[in-house]
Structure formats: structure tokens, C-alpha cells
Image 1 (cartoon, helix red, strand yellow):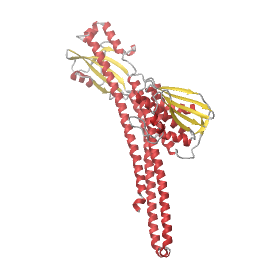
Image 2 (cartoon, helix red, strand yellow; image 1 turned 180 degrees about the vertical axis):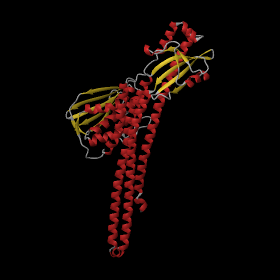
Image 3 (cartoon, helix red, strand yellow; image 1 turned 90 degrees about the vertical axis):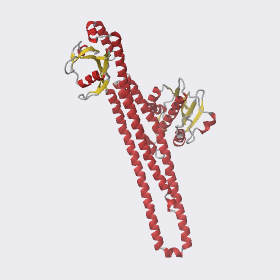
Image 4 (tube, helix red, strand yellow; image 1 turned 60 degrees about the vertical axis):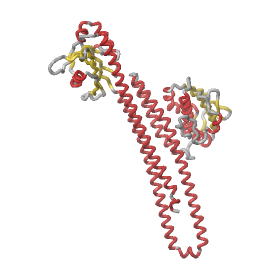
Amino acid sequence: MYKNKFKLFYIFNLLAVIIAIMSFYLKQEFDHTKTNITDAYNKEHIQFVKEFTQNIDTSIQEKIHSNLRKTLEENLSLRNELEEHLSLFISSTYKYLYLLERVPNNDNNQFKFLLDGSKIASEKSDFLENYEPLEVAQFNRVYKEKKAIFFKHTDIKSLWITYLHPIIMNKKVVAVLVVDFSMKNYQTISNSLNDFHATFMQVILFSIFLVLTILWFSFMDKKREETKDRLFKKLETESKKVFMLNETLEERVNEEVIKNREKDKQLIQQSRLAQMGEMISMIAHQWRQPLTAISATSSGMHFKAQRDTLQKKDILKYTDNISSYAKHLSHTIDDFRDFFKPTKDKSFVNYTEIIDSVLNIIQSSFDEKRIQLILDLNNEERFNTYANELKQVLLNLIKNAEDILIEKQIDNCYVKIKTFKKENLFIMEVSDNGGGIKQEILENIFDPYFSTKEQKDGTGLGLYMSKTIINEHCEGELSVHNGEDGAIFTIALS
């Protein structure tokens, strides 16, 4: 009897542990993604330096076959030509690029300029001008090992790295090609990811707090039940004579009371478990979308930084987007916590405001994947509804359309959003050219845990959740049918 009584208690505690495990798993996935982004940027940056220095080395070797310094000293036009070649690679990232020759002496600490790729005349060094490197050991190491090396400046606070590339002729190092380049963009990306990590940790801490709260209330419920059982047994013992006099009647009364109490407890626990299970699945489904957008934003930063086209305004834009996505992750928990509360307030909005808010999240993903977004907005009239829940539905429909377009590799793919008013209904249609939904499964598309994704990575809860929000909470209707190019999802609100 006691074992059956607390069966749901153990299930409830197991569910709390699952929440904690999911939280830490998401943190590990983020840390892994952050490391991959920064490592990939660093490797690509360094690989680019290696490639263009090798290009310069090849150019020098083709034009000069022996006695590098003498040739450059005698042939001014060739020297100017090679310096112009070096200057092609000068930028805010690759600020200094020059060719040095070591002067033979006792300590090998003196070098002279052979070529200087600086574009600013006041910063340009003269031919055979003296140069004393701060890290002379690194320069001598290149002459000794005949291999290119990277090193960071130990006495400079900013993120500057020097790359030394040996120019080898007749199996001897005759000069060193020096590239000083900045890792400031790398630091900017790293700082942005660290800021997001701080917000993400707040979400993890909230999840841990939620787990501890669940465990605490479960423990207290168990203790109260144990105390009740002890008191009941004690009362039963002390009142044994009274029970004996009214044995038949009291036994029936106690049996019905216990049965009713057990039924009530089971219904309450089942309701809590069902809602908790739905909440966990929905949160996981909703988090996947902003995390995908964050990954796309980071890739965009990586792409522009790799080609040295990352401007300050781009960095501000990307970091603002990442912060917005992080806030969306944090707010998602609050949204779903209040999801089943009947006290949620409605507000007056129009479809254009809802669409603009959702596009702030999905636009970068569409741009990266070259999906055209077509807006046909024909109604600005406001209506009373649950704005946040309507945004979640629209975001889910757009993301589903994006997934099917990418999965089927559709050429000239697009997603179209159309709004209009028909009689007393406010209509919004979301369509795509992904080929539509098979007729045999069209009627099952809103069933829970039913997914059409070929990779089987969908939870099957997105459309079920959307149907619940529109039909039950917003008192409208969500439907789907196939058009000429693909599926058309229709939201109708009064």
C-alpha cells in the first residue's frame, strides 16, 4: 500500500532530474559550439596569412634568382614593383608587411629593410634602414630552422601576432618576410560569445532553481504524507475500542475516504506531470530556433571577418542580434510558465507588428540561406488577442517552411506571408514553394508527436502546440491546405 502511494512521487522526482540533465547538456553544447567558432576563425585567419605570404615568396623567387639585396639595390623599378605587391595585402588587420635581411655580425641582432609594403609615406622605412626586432630570438630561430613561425608579442597588450616567413635561395635563408596582424576582430567575437554565455548561465541557474524547488516540494509532500500516516495509526490505536463498536460503519467510511483521497491525489499529479512534460518538450522545440539564428549570426561574423570586411557597424548589428536571441531564450521560459494560466491578458495588435517582431529573429537565417521573404500585407486594423502566443505560432510556421525548403533543396525558394480581412475575420496566410504536404498525411499534420521531417529530428509538437494556441487560447482557427507551389497555413481570428 505504501509503495503504491508514493509511486507518482518517484516519477515526479525523476522528471526533475531530467530537467537538470537537459540544462547541463545544453550548456555543454553551447561551450562546444563557442570553441568551434573561435577555433575556426583563428585557423582560417592564420591560413590566409600563410597563403598570401607564400604568394609573395613565389613572386620574389620568380623575379630574383640570386643575390637578393644586390638585385633590389640596383633595380629600383623592381623594388617598387615588389613593394606595391606587398601593399596589396595591407589593411586594418594586416597593418605591417615588410622584408628584412639579417646583417652578419657577432650577435645576429641587427636587420635591414629590403622591402616595406606600408601605404603611408610617413610610416614607410627606407631601403637598408636598420631594424631591431623586439623578439630577436624568434627571428634567429627562423634562420636556424628554415621554417615559418607565429608568435605573440609578450610586451604588447593589444592582440597583435607576428608571422615570420623565410625566403630561401640556394638552400639558405636570405631574408625574412614579416607580417604583423591584429586579432582584434577575434577578440570582439569572443567577447560577444562570452556575453551570451553569461545570459545562458542565468537560464541554466533558473533551471537548477526550478529543479531544486520541485525536489523540495516533493520531499515536503512525502514528509506530510508520512506524518499523516503516523498520526492516523496512532489515532487508530488509541480509538480501537470505539472502532470496535462501530466496526462495520467506520470501515466503510474510512475506505471511501481513502479511495477518494487517492483519486484526488492521482488526478492532481497526473495533471502536473502532463503539463510539465508538454512544457519541457515545447521549450526544447522553441529554443532550437533562436539557437539556429545565433549560429547563423556567428557564421556571418566569421565570414565577413575572414575577408576583412567586418565593420564596426556590422559588429554592433551582430552583437545586438545575439543579445536579442539570448533574451528570447530567457523569455521563452517565462512565456511557457504562464502558457496554461487563464489569467493571461490580451492586447490590441495588428498582424504587421506581429510579423515585424518575428522577422527580427528569423531574418538573418533567411538571408544566409538565400530564402526570399515575400510580404503581402493588406490589413493594418488592430484586434484583441494574445500577442506573444501568436508570435510563437508564426515563428513556428516560418521555421517549418524554412526547414522543408532546405531539406528539399528547392531552387529560388521563398516564404510568403499574406494578410487581409475577410468579412469579420482577420486572416494571415504563410506559404512556401516546398511542394506541399502529401495528401495521405494532411489530416494528421496537427497531431501531437507527428513529424514529416526526413531526418526524424522533429518532436512533432510544433504544429500541435500552434493548433492549441490558435483554436483554444485565441479562439480562432488554424488550418492547412496545398496550393500550386506548396503548403498554405491559414490563421483566422475574429
